[in-house]
Image 1 (tube, each protein chain N blue to C red):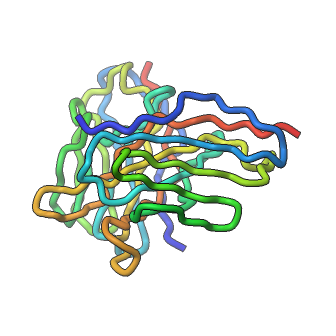
Image 2 (image 1 turned 90 degrees about the horizontal axis):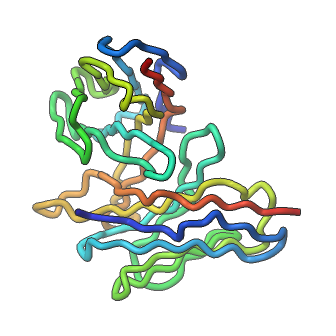
Length: 116
Length: 118
């Protein structure tokens, strides 16, 4: 069973703080790793994805990947109340024959609340 | 922008009814997916399709079937709805961004269909 586990949350941080969201995965063959944000009552929307070990920055968001530890994280700097949402970690496993269809496996999500 | 349109936002059905959930995407994506989302369980893949008339089971296909007669349309069918199929259903399509790294399949989701089975 390919699994993706996220820190259980909910996570509450004050405005302006750094929010840290964590995710571990079990399939060592996983190729790429995604963070989606989902506002209440809305569908998930992509924040960013990463496939190489290390950090990838996009504005206030930084994704970190450590394949040896099978660990991926998302840091949100200068958190804003508008960042309050559920954050979903997703993993793209390596399909048989090396074809990637985009069958993402999602974690259960972490609810983040940023309070003023 | 890619648009993924789900035909119904809210449905209420009776146990035993046949239910059709329709999804249309307008960007010529090869791959389309049906997920269900339940509190505490995240998104779970029901079925996906990588080409017209091609489909594969996901993690929880029992009680569901799908149809993809045209590239832009992917339908989820509940042959005989049951109360444990009450859920939010999310359709998605994906594009492989070949120049952005391995496995860079970006999923775009529809707005979701919330199904209640009584």
